[in-house]
Length: 250
Ligand SMILES: NC(=O)C1=CN([C@@H]2O[C@H](COP(=O)(O)OP(=O)(O)OC[C@H]3O[C@@H](n4cnc5c(N)ncnc54)[C@H](OP(=O)(O)O)[C@@H]3O)[C@@H](O)[C@H]2O)C=CC1
Ligand SMILES: O=C(O)C1=N[C@H](C(=O)O)C[C@H](O)C1
Image 1 (cartoon, protein in one colour):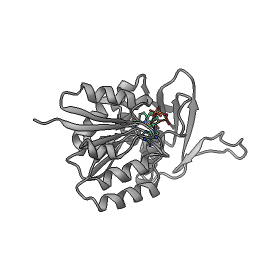
Image 2: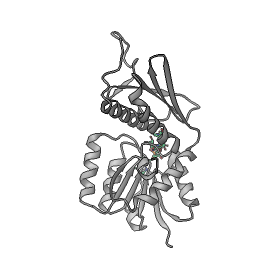
Image 3: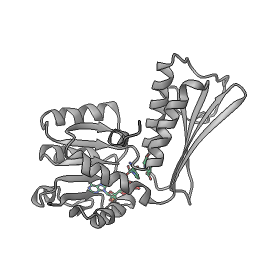
Image 4: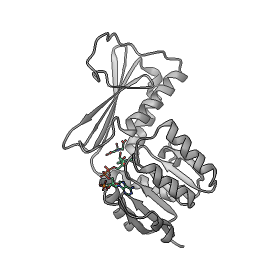
């Protein structure tokens, strides 16, 4: 059977360099391009890449995806910075290239995907919920894509269960003291040397709390998700948001 032809964008970066090694080590894949900033996107077409793994920056990702979708190259995207406007733009591009698939995964690690799922399940049963994400200090965006997605899922689960606003008597606060407000869920971002990627979801009800915590201790935690995404995206046209759609989580 022929190997899946995979390219990595952001190949010299922290996660991109790990993805290059993972693709090279995968028996069913061939690494056909490893591109960094300034490299020509035309290389993707010239090398016959079927899937581009996009691991760059929020400032670069849209131009890269525009090129990929126009050339019918499927994409597996870990880069953060997704807004409603950006997703709408991407869907417009995909509508003009209906055979092409794009997976955007706020987090490729199975533990992080499960954290989101567990938080979603727990959310209707607790009056209060806050998200704390903790990352290495070289991270350029805050809050993390994972924390933003987690808060959105929690907010949707609360709304569906008919829960109102959270209790919070704060009337005076320093800027940022209560975190970022993502759909009514406070999200706090910590940047600390020594950390990689971590998240806690704190849930509180009368007389009890529940904490769901996940730690990515090495970039290898993201690799099985990236490889799974590359294998599945080629037969999944359109936009898929979240790796959970490629997992059987029940
Ligand atoms: N979904 C997930 O599971 C994960 C997502 N991420 C996300 O992935 C992204 C990358 O993270 P990280 O590796 O830590 O960041 P890095 O800054 O280490 O890596 C980004 C790399 O992309 C390069 N780059 C920038 N623009 C382009 C471009 N147009 N074409 C090709 N390469 C480009 C940068 O080059 P230069 O240094 O020259 O600017 C750099 O080498 C972030 O958005 C992060 O949040 C990270 C880990 C897991
Ligand atoms: O920048 C990182 O490192 C990470 N970014 C992603 C995010 O913003 O959620 C995923 C993971 O947290 C690591």
